[in-house]
Image (cartoon, rainbow, N blue to C red):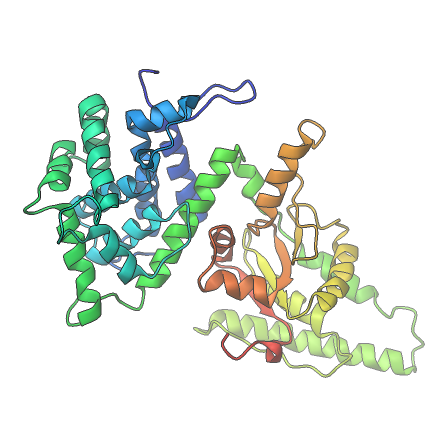
Length: 434
């Protein structure tokens, strides 16, 4: 076994990844994919909190069991499952740094489920924290965490002490964390259980606020995107979007109907379309200066609603921000896709435009696919389905299912929505529940 714990084994000629290197890289990536303006429930910068969370997420890999597993001795016991260990460590670290109790609990759930999907929070946290019956059968997950913490304390104490002292900025210690995990009278499990038990009562500040689910989604999705893309070897620039040029669309629109006769009906219709677009763009300036976050655009059939709506979206976005254009049906998406690929001279497989629905080939080309065709295809799909392009054309289903109760993979697109301009075309087709 190597002296320093590793996170990922050597593959394809590359050296093994050291655990601390992986934690630091995921922390940096997670910090970069959330909004710089977002705050936690307690009012702290989300960028700082998610970096702390990400640094704790895989700490449980420091056990001898996981180290044996990762170098292919294949210990398949549950002691190699590391998420819950990292969840309790993250809760402890944030608590010692003075974070709001709901921030700490949201982090615990995000860390515990970063390889799965979000559970019912109250039921799940009760299951992983209740210690009324001390038998191993009814508290298996808690017992595993206790064994894992003891294992690191026995074999990696110096490593763990340095890590926790740094993570808590000297406000906590590994020895205290071990004591809080192992103490049957006043354990960290009891603290978490008492916290979540207040959810049902709703009698004081300990009950979850309206912002709890929002924070949980942001932590969970940001951590998943950062962890998966770092582990896959995806570079920072592969997650950056190309800025769609509004002038390109304006020039395209200006060329439409250029050959029409001066007195023809087509020319008259083009004049009406131009007037409508100018009115909409004037409205964009007013909208930007207002406190509103939702605007509507209503035009008769044949007035160029799609291009006008996209023109407004491009005018509204700031540099580096994305546009997500959602429609109800794949047949309509294909029509819009044909037009956008023509307007912007793209094959919709780059960082400018992504087409995402269940019938589309959703990929973003990364480098030379001939170097490793299978690996390239997997990464190209991961980036595209994370909506990292400047524009994404997608369905209502893809958008709304990712906002409410997303799967692990669906969550990876959520960080792309920060400060994005989202266009819902034909919103009357939205299901009532959405």
